[in-house]
Length: 330
Image (tube, rainbow, N blue to C red; front, side, top):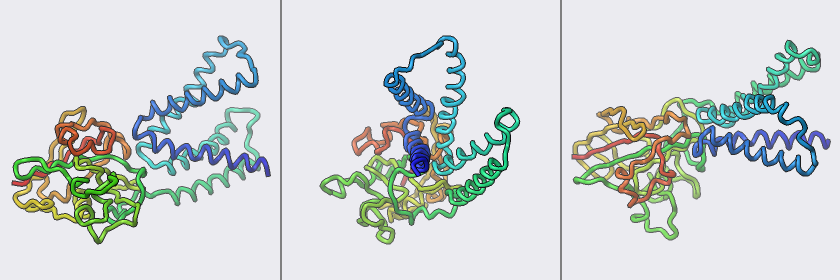
């Protein structure tokens, strides 16, 4: 029983690491995250060596082998797993990683003379395959039937990136509603898609207390957070955001402004606009997943586009996915 307890504890520690990778990789990147994990591992090993007083024998002789094994067995897999989690959810990454022992059984049979396949190992292989197949069925499907306007939940989801909305009306850029309008004390920290008032959220879509919509804002800068609990094949749209907000959006109306609406989607890279597309129907503008993946925000937010921070910086660490949506009402 004690061994089974240790086995379950080890599985919990290893399995939960995929969740923490998913949370961290969107902010610090795959290579940096892998380096930090390895640094903590090195400190732990050095502490064990120090406490057990084990000497480093023949270090120069075995150093090339240690470096080779460390790179291909630890560093490179850590980087690739972190990179993969910018494109798939953490549950799926953990399940796919669980296939490694299954492949090891087959490969070891042909490469190692003392690791031949036995009936017991075949039985373990079959059980493992069945278990992983069942787990895959439970993993998020990434389908297009996710109800974006109707979803309420917590932040820190599988998908988390930022889009910049610039509304230009009455001859000037318009900030989105924030605590200037809410006048709440303390500051709630989130507004559109969170505050249960019609200026901020469609009354028919109010979330339970403490929960937040998949599309929401944290200030008046124009930065929209896209945070969903699963991957989707069809991206959410500006129409979804306005539906959550409960405000009109069409070729003649944006929020409280009326007139001819020109809607443009710009994609930026390293601060430069690399593509620009006009949309006759502004509600159809998609919130595309950034090139860095569903948690990737590779671009620095241009401060001139968010009032130089006068209404906040988006609650996004100064970065966004590179998509700028411009709505001009004339």
